[in-house]
Image (cartoon, rainbow, N blue to C red; front, top):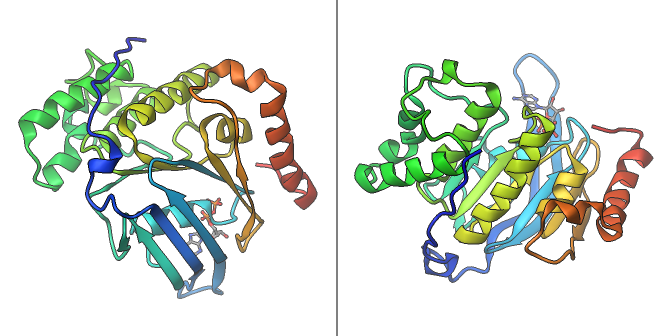
Length: 276
Ligand code: ADP
């Protein structure tokens, strides 16, 4: 796959609202779904955590414990029931331009080319098309999609579409990137490649990243901290500092130190009798 290193862009410190140290600040968060035709479901309860500017945090937990719910709340896509949620110093009350979101599926618009899809946030936010088109092309090259700019989503594999979805989330250089199991549909080798690429993008951009993943080794490899949730209603079982040196390459995952973290997280799921 073609790779190109992006030029260094402004550090996180120069971004809007950079005086806030807790870039994501969640306190006493609860979310109860109240469907019209069925019983209420409390998905999240008593969630407290802070993510520092430029930090990479992953969220792991058994299926149905509220991981996607948490990310959607952070993204301002759904309301929470109680508690406080702040991103880059502001109360989240709806989608914010400084947040980029990558969903489990690429959700590209089938009638738009790949480049046009990547440009959607630029158009929605009324940003300068010329400079961002360059950025879009750079990102597509970096994820191995140069030459596919004018193709339509149906002409690309699922993995390629997902990589385009990641470019779309990054094109406007959001200060916060929220990723919901973004690599789940990729084959193992592409997934590892994307993990390494994501770390490279993160190192260059200084973004604050919150990632939901079903893969414990992936969470350990990528993160500064891993938030482990309990079975539903999701509560925080533990927040684990991953003290592995950076920059990291895939060899890190073969190390004993990484293995200790993976085992420690896995024990929660074994104890609860659930594994994703
Ligand atoms: P996870 O991402 O950890 O698998 P989710 O956040 O998708 O978990 O879901 C958490 C819980 O909330 C689940 O029990 C799920 O059934 C419930 N839930 C999610 N979305 C809705 C919804 N729109 N209406 C009612 N219940 C929901």
